[in-house]
Length: 266
Image (cartoon, rainbow, N blue to C red; front, side, top):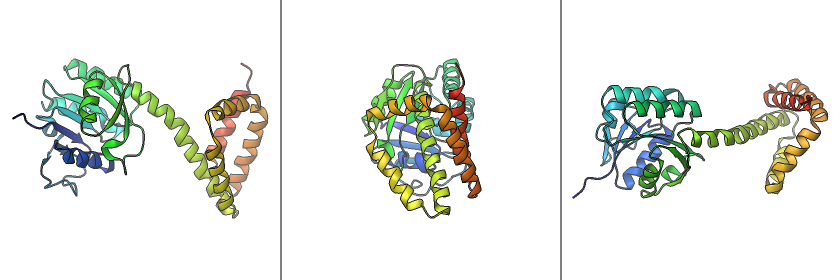
């Protein structure tokens, strides 16, 4: 009888712990490590779960290592696992952290030096409420193998034909748009709340989002470039108003700067 698939999960915070729980439900043997959470609630004592004392210990005997700690710890976690001799000759390292493409490429180069395949995985939605089923993109060496392993356990992984860093590139480009939009909405509602217009603005924002379709992007890009001078002045006035209401106009001022840049002769 073959042994169950063994997966190490490094980082047992919100995302890592949810993924680890789903892996356990799928019958996977999970070896977990998090320096800040030595005894993760809901995992410790669960059949199939082994709590490790280091990255190397968690990776020992694992077929696949999922690094879900943090972008700033992505490289150091891999280095620690390698230095401790924990990553076996047939193991694959998959980095799920929201790190830059350059960091993902650094991980791939480090893995190449030690004969360890590195796969870049980008989680494209919040993990809470989805767990292992969160939509993922995978690129880099062994991306197809990792996708096949996780898909067989209930995950949804799209394989991209390209090196480590490609999945991260797609995710972060989306982040520029989505997180920028989210920050602008938060800033606008904070200012609207001061003058008692938050409810009105929230409905207006929801209505605009609901009307968006495939033509919306072209219309926004074309209009922004065509009317950059006027809109730059408009956003300067908006930033002044927001500041006057006691809200730091970070997004409004950034919008002003972008419009002014686009208004410059090319």
